[in-house]
Image (tube, rainbow, N blue to C red; front, side):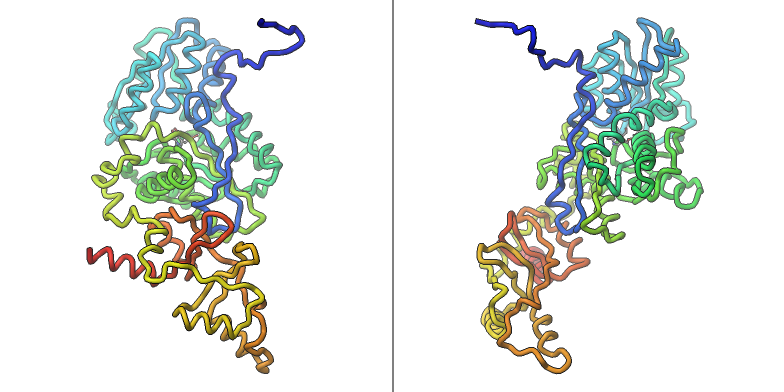
Length: 471
Ligand SMILES: Cc1ncc(COP(=O)(O)O)c(C=O)c1O
C-alpha cells in the first residue's frame, strides 16, 4: 500500500536548473603526490549540462527578461566553444526560447552534436581569422542577432552577469567548502568570468587569497597581464581557454599571477586526471591542473596551503580528441611508446625488484652492511606495521658519522638520520610525470597506500629509457 504522509516533504527539485552548482570538492592525490600542500579539485562536470558554464546560462536569460530585451518566443544567440551553449540551451528549454550557437571549427564534433540534441541551430565558422573579420564567430553571431527578430546576444564575453554568477555561487561555495581555508584558487581563463567572479568574492573574504589564472601558449592573456602589451595570438588545441582579445568580463586586477601551459602538458595532465584520479575531465582541466602544479612547485607551497583548482568540464566531449591515443600521436603529443610506461614498469625492469626496508631502531652499522650486501645507497624506513616513515641515505649516514668531534658511532640507531620528506608516487604514475619529479628529488618511493612497494632513482629511469631504446 502506498501512503502519502502530508507531513513528509518529498525531496524534489522543481526543474533541472535548480540542480546547478554545489559541485563537490575532491582531494587530488596521485598527480599532486610530491607537493606538501593540499590540492583540491572543484569538479564542475557534476552540473547537469556537464560544465561550469551551466552556472551562467539561467542568470543571463533572466537578466535579459528583466530588462525587457528578451520577450516570449524569442531567440538566444551566442558565440560559444560549446559549454556555454549547453548552459543556455538548458535554461532556454525550460523557458521556451529558441537558440542559435556559433562555434569555431576547431571544436569537437561531440560539442556540435550535443547542442543540436537540445534543438539548437549550430553555425560553424573558421578558427584562423581575426576577431574583427566578418567570418569570425563573434561577428557572425552579431549578424545573426541583427537578422533574427526578437533575438538577443547572450554575450558571455561582455555580459557582467557572467562574472556575477560566479561571485554569487562558485565563490561562496569554495569559501564554505574549505571552511575559509582556501589560500590559492587556480582556473583556466576564457571569458574570465570564473576567475573574476570567484576572485572578487574570495578577496573580499580574505585579501590574501592568491588568484591564479592559467593561459595556453598562443593566447595573449599571459603577456597582457605581465606587461600590459597586446601580442599576436597563435593557434593551440586546448578548447575553452585563452583569448586573442581581452573580454570585458575579465578583471585582471583580481588576478595575482598567470601561469602558461602548452597543449602537450595540458593533455597529458588531463589524461593523468582520468587514469590516476578517476576524474573523467576535459582538456582545459589538464591545463588548470598542470598550471597549478607548476605554480605550487615554483612558489614552494607548504602544508598549510589549500589550493583549489577548478575543473570546468567532462571528458565525454573529447573522446575523439585528446582521450584518443591515435589523435594524440597524430598531433605529436604521444611521440614514443615509452610515454605510456608507468612507475611500476620501471620498477619491474630493475634487476633487484624486491624492496629492502629498514626500521628506525636498526643500527647504523647493520644498515650500512645491508646497503653493501644489496648494492643500494638508500632505503625506505618503515615502522613495525610496515608504514612508510621516511628514507635513509648512505650519504646522510656518512655525514652523520663525520660530524664535528666524531661523537657518533656506528652502533647508534639510524633514527636521527631519517629524512621524512620522501616523494611517493602511485604504481600507475606515468614515466612522463616521474621525469618532472626527478627535476627536484633524487629518489621516489612507489606506494599505493601507507606501505612502500618499490623505490626508484634517476639511474633506474635512465636504465629503463636506454633499454626501451634498444628494443
Ligand atoms: C572547457 C572550458 N574551460 C574553461 C573555460 C573558461 O571559463 P571562463 O569563460 O569563465 O573564463 C571555458 C569557457 O568556455 C570552457 O569551456
